[in-house]
Length: 100
Image (cartoon, rainbow, N blue to C red):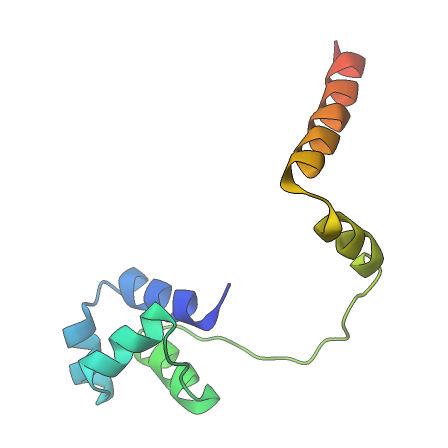
């Protein structure tokens, strides 16, 4: 989930309009709109403050990156969408046949 989606989800889950969030946070409604559109990214401090104003916490922790599937994902990313779909349908067909 991207920052724009998190800001929008926090606001809507809090039942706030952009205008209401603007009044509560002191951030211009136009800036909130640009954050939600993804055309501008808030600083990490503004991001966390907006989430808090909406009544939520977003704990940030450092975690080691798991790169175990990177090679396979990269290989699949190089395939055409049609080839990926055929592979998926083939695997679903095999699984469906064994379940019958």
